[in-house]
Length: 271
Image (cartoon, rainbow, N blue to C red):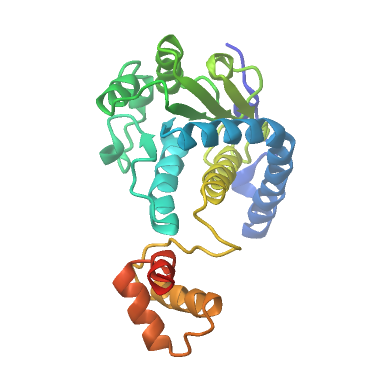
């Protein structure tokens, strides 16, 4: 069987004989290589992001598809983007083996399911306006590969983030991003460098898209949901900074709480 880079033996050995200091230094040294690998992949990532933006501007949706670490990170991204940018959860969604209700289960055998991913997409009414992006460190995950193949057969735009070059998943994606992070500190433990690179790419995808779609003004999250004390206090500071005529923080708090966000409060203020 072909040995992909992510499965190649670690550059470090006899890990069980290492001190705490040696282990953490080795892990940190390897982690510092991740940003370099992501940097090399930026041109391809930028093309994928532009394709996603075009789909979302045309009322399409973005679906992430993944298993294990990649699938869980992708699901986290869909949750966090709702609170950070005030979206309703339909614009960016996650497809995980068995459904996102299975996120805390460790039944990794589900990643061999060739039908569940496409079934979930059909249940959500996937169509030609949408784009589906798969995440797979190996670039071979059957769940992701089969789902992207179904999409291609139905004329649905696809992309992928993988951590090996020339993978089967990249070959079926319209926009492939190969972030070659190399062997892991613990051989084959792709939750480490590969997972870190996937989190970085997810941050770049969703943040760039939200900025481009007008959910950020200046450098402020003016559409963030007011769901806890920290976010409310931040919103008050942002609102008062952007509207210096409001001198009283209690008044600012009342205005944004009544409206639901900084942006909505400003719209009311300037009516």
